[in-house]
Length: 487
Image 1 (cartoon, rainbow, N blue to C red):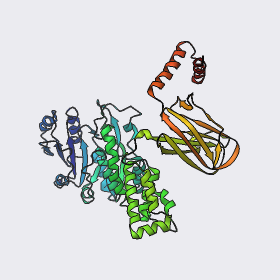
Image 2: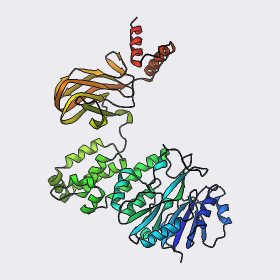
Image 3: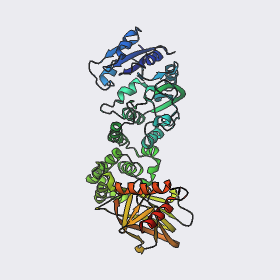
Image 4: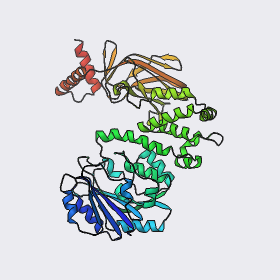
């Protein structure tokens, strides 16, 4: 009986599959069987696979493309004590299996062993694009399973699938299968794995993971995958919902201690609040909203939520009215606004309150709770990344109207509208003296600047620059434009 079963998946990577097969067959650890499953490749992959005559190979070709081969029925035929996944475009160092088997043999408490990873490009060269998502995604750190679950929750998958060696009984007994998932199947497995088992990442770079320039990796950053990711995060959320023991939950989420009241906590409520308030993942938000609805409908838990947190069905209704998980409101109706506050110390990100607000009939109103902070100046950014016009700006601080404000960015006034020619529109409010502030409310009529007006503005500035006035700031240029327009 072989100690390891290796599954090599093949689909249309004929230019790479020979290197992948050779890197497995030439392992220093020899006691394995190698399943090669070709998912109806349309290139020469299957021809290459058939050239190999090694007795350890079991080669299977699908008659039609099935989009994967990780089914329980297939795995039930595997004979190994351990299971390793390999991809037809990736490569193993020759001592990979030897080092991983040795570790798992000596650490029976560990469910799976991964390795550090060298990312390579299409030609097999070390990947050197520092800004690419994969350039620093894989970790070689080691944490306990609770820390891994926290890390997964906030930062996503950091483990490389073709680097894994998993105990076969863990794979089967814990049902580490992810049928129906196309973007996050590996991530789903690792979260499920860490719900019960410790894992280990070998520090040596024993796996070479190939990044394709055309983003053809299964998890490439294509529009389809970006949509799919948010949908599949709902399945990840359900896995976290399985953590019901309060002590274990607090080990995964130490930050949830704020939801412990007199030693008691509703774990489902705490998880929902963390998902809503500490992540921007729509799949998490959808799960959290539905879980809160379940809790307030249940006779037992609804009373517990009231007793512990003062949380009622009205609160759920408020959340469901704000949480646009189905993208009902168009992106152009949202404003990403911010209020910066300072007490004669300068503005900074640490003294900022950000909010996403919705326009209603070309009008917005937003309130910021400053909780009695000492403030001398405020800076309000209505949104970012959009050219806007404002009119009827109305600002109150603790109920008192404020008339002393300045539009800082470059603007022109057109029939009482402030046309702000900046992707970072800013309103500055000087309180003249330091005072304690509780609430700031700002509202205004708003519209987006028409494309023709933007082009006209750009043409004016370009024309002035062409006439050798490049030493002037844009604000000065606008002053010239205004004066010439009056002639």
